[in-house]
Length: 191
Image 1 (cartoon, helix red, strand yellow):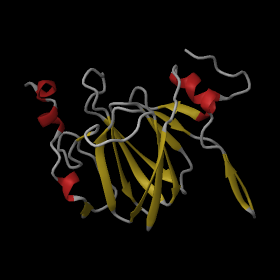
Image 2 (cartoon, rainbow, N blue to C red):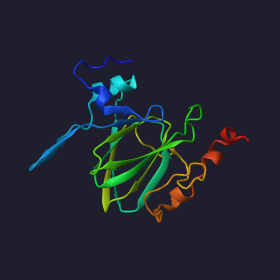
Image 3 (cartoon, rainbow, N blue to C red):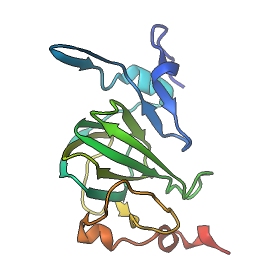
Image 4 (cartoon, rainbow, N blue to C red):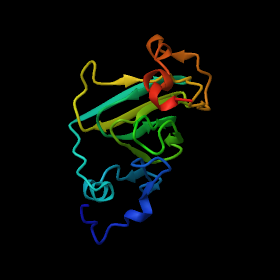
């Protein structure tokens, strides 16, 4: 475990969630008539909370229109997600076969209405639905994207029972055709 800096109120702003390894980062936002200021990422604090070094190598930016749903993508890298513009329903699915919370999901709101970020560990499913007119969804990753590195779960998987906050009419053909968690991990669903 890395040392926590003495002057850093980690317990106040990097909060664990019900899914092990997923953290909600609630940095304060300071605003006035000119606009606002907020810190998005403080490496020493996040590393101390995680117990390992989060070393991003790629930054990604996705812009999507209202009622767009993207995901569920399982990546072999860690992600730090922030929504810079608009609002989304962020969904994280525990797709780690050896996890005690395998098959469970977390749904939180991120964006201009809720100035938070979320840390998603490698091996977790990630999806989001745009609840505003437009959203700029940005994230740092610890590995470079390349075709074939990610796997996918169907956003409408009945085993997950995700309550999406939008109509699911704007989903890519590819995302509509992904297999269910049961199809990917049949050994986890033996009855």
